[in-house]
Every structure is written in structure tokens, then in C-alpha cells.
Amino acid sequence: MPMQPQEIEDLIRAAFPDARIVVQGDDGVHMSAMVIDESFRGQNRIQQQRAVYAALKGKMDGPSGELHALALTTKAPE
Amino acid sequence: MNPAARLAADAMNAVGVGRTLDMPSEKEPQMNTETQIKETVTANDVVLFMKGTKSMPQCGFSSRVAGVLNFMGVEFADVNVLADEAMRQGIKDYSDWPTVPQLYVKGEFVGGCDIITEMTLSGELDQLFEQNGVAYDKDAADKIREANA
Image (cartoon, rainbow over all chains, first blue to last red; front, side, top):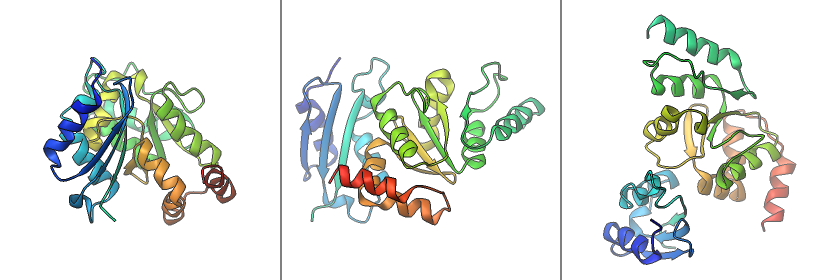
């Protein structure tokens, strides 16, 4: 089942309530998300993206390929 | 490690850098995937776990990272996770990272497609290779950056 952008944003939002989140893409399978959150300050990209993947709770690698690919951009606010 | 596993690990080491690593399909069932991964990333300076092979990638994201490494003239071992179901899941567990491709330099997980793309464009990938004594073509790296400026 493809995912709606809003659904992806809601999952990320639950873990990062104050983040700036932009989810793009319309096929629900190949999507992109930008997450800008204060909690990322001082973390490397691997740590930042792990935290976002954790928020998505396994949607990334579901056997049904729910969300095959989510291009991620993560950073702390300027 | 049992003798059969030891043998398989040695055989993998002998494959060396710059070759496609076909994970032995007839391997002992108890051959630990984690051990297998550890041996591979230790024996090769640069390893890309990917869908497909570096000469025939089977996913756009794997293709992009393999393409960058190929273009930069980096010697790397490729592991096709589609050829081995245990590896496909095992590499995700090993790195605690849910997606493929995954790039390792000197045994350390560097990142997936998005991180490698960002690092290529920012020059951080050049720095990482320099710090680890990995040969690469600086001019080619600059060309990638120029083309994406």
C-alpha cells in the first residue's frame, strides 16, 4: 500500500513535534522528505537519519514495499 | 567460528578488492551473516552493499552510488543483496539502517544514497577517502560537483 505524504509527515511529526517537515512525491512509494529539527544539532547525518527512520516504524522496509524509498534530507535549523 | 565458516571467510578474503563478491550460495546454513559482513568490510577498504552489481545495478539508488564511485575511479567491492536473502536482511541489522545501498569505508558505515550524494557534492567524500588512504580521481569528483552546481 502506497503512503500518502500526509501520513508520512504525521509519523515524522509524532517524533519531531517542532520540526519543519516537507514531504514531496506523489506515487507514495518513491518519496522525499526534508526534516529540519533542533534535536539534530551536533548529530552526524547517520544519527539524524536513523532517528527519522525510527519514527517511520519499519515503513521503509515492509515486505509489501510500502515505502520503497524515501529520499531524506536532515539538518538542524540555521 | 566453526571450520566451515572459517573456510568460507578465508575464501571471501581471497577474493580481494575490486571484484564482485558472490556470496557463496552453498554456504553452511549456520554461517553467520554478521560474521560474513564483518569479514567483507574488513578485507576491503571500500564496500558497497547494493541491489544488483556495480556493472549492472538493479535499483536507481544503488546505481547512483555505484556510479559515483565508478566515475571517481574508486576501487570497491560490491555485494549484491538481491542474490542472498539472509544478506538482504543481515546488512540492515548490521548497520541498524533500513535501506540499501550502504557504503562502508575501512569497516565503518558511511551512509546510504542521500548521505553519499550530499557528501560527494560537499567534498566530504573526498576528505573521507583522503583520510583513509583510498585512491580516487579528484578531477572526476570536481566534475561531478561542477555538473551539479
